[in-house]
Amino acid sequence: MKKIVLFLIALNIALCGCTQKIKENDVPTSVVDKFKKDYPDRTDVKWEKKGSNYEALYKNPNEYLEVQYDKDGNVIQSEHQIEIAALPKEVKGYTASNFPGKNISEAYLITDKDGNDTYECIIEEKTYVFDSDGKYKTEKTTKIRK
Image (cartoon, rainbow, N blue to C red; front, top):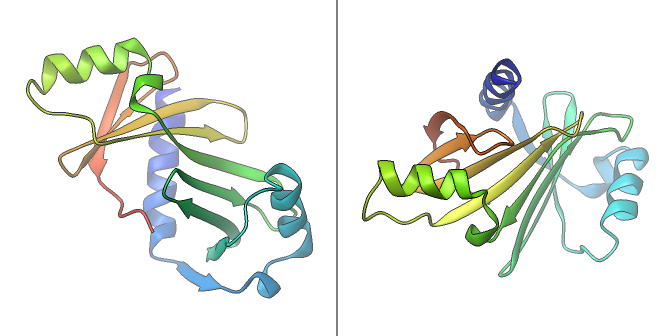
C-alpha cells in the first residue's frame, strides 16, 4: 500500500507540470459520458488535460470533487472533500498528538482505480497523507484547490 501511495504522489507531481485547461468539447465523449453518468447533478465542470488523462473539476461552496480518467473513460482516481468529522479516528488522533493546538482545515478522500482509499488533511498549508486505516504515510506541499 505504501508503494501505491508513493507512486500516486509521484505521478501527481509529474503530471502537474503537464496540466492544461481545456473545453468540454475537447474531452473524449467516453470521458464526458462517464462523468455525467456517475455525477449527473454536477454542472459547471472545468476540464483539464494531464498528460494523456483528463480531469473533471467541480467546486461549489459545499463540495470539491476531482475525477481523473484515461482516454477511454476509465476512472484513474477521484478526490472528494469530506467533513473533518468523517476522517478515521486514527487520523484525528495522529494530528491531535503531533500538531497540538493546530486544526485540520480541510479533509479529502482519494480513491484510486482499484478502489483503494487514502485520506489527506490540510494543516497550516501542509497536506498529510494517511492510508485507508488512518495510518500516517507522508506529507506534501499543499496543492492549491482550483
